[in-house]
Image 1 (cartoon, helix red, strand yellow):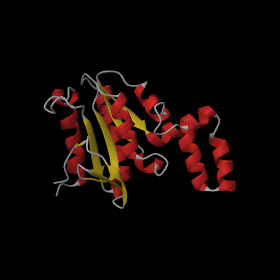
Image 2: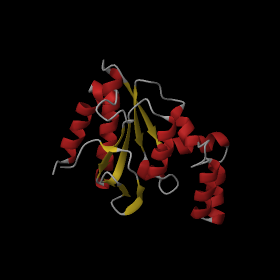
Image 3: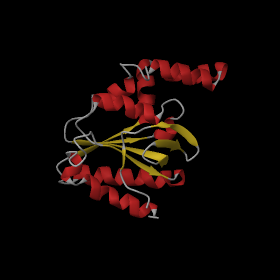
Image 4: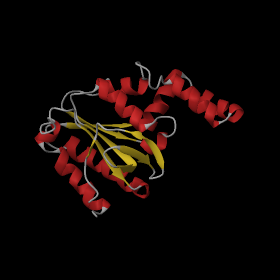
Length: 194
């Protein structure tokens, strides 16, 4: 079994290959990838993501990484709509479950005009590599398989990598190695654990 350090080191080798960014060798299927990792390595993975973004974006690699932290996007959208403070007050009165459902409705999650998906789509240009982070921070409001399914419908010219604190076996997403998120068949493992 590879160590987390070995696996993290393999990321740059994979994403800097031109064939990776052009999605060649995948039967012309859109390149959606998942880098799964043990949740205990969350801080290490976050640090490595920052390192990769700086190295690639400040270097001469011919592409840029765009990171989208789902939690930060959610907060920004709620703040913009004037709902963030209201959510804090509402949670004290009506509880977390009520706020979770209200937030899902406010962000139009799973709808055709899903605000998270629009946010990402509007900020990506051809030639980018997209990093999706913050999956664990935003659960249970935003589910990773929902983001991938909805993003797949609108973002098809750039590779997308989701950093997933849990297990992805090529079929099933298990968040925190305990919570079955849902099946997702369209993504490839970015770096195997073995």
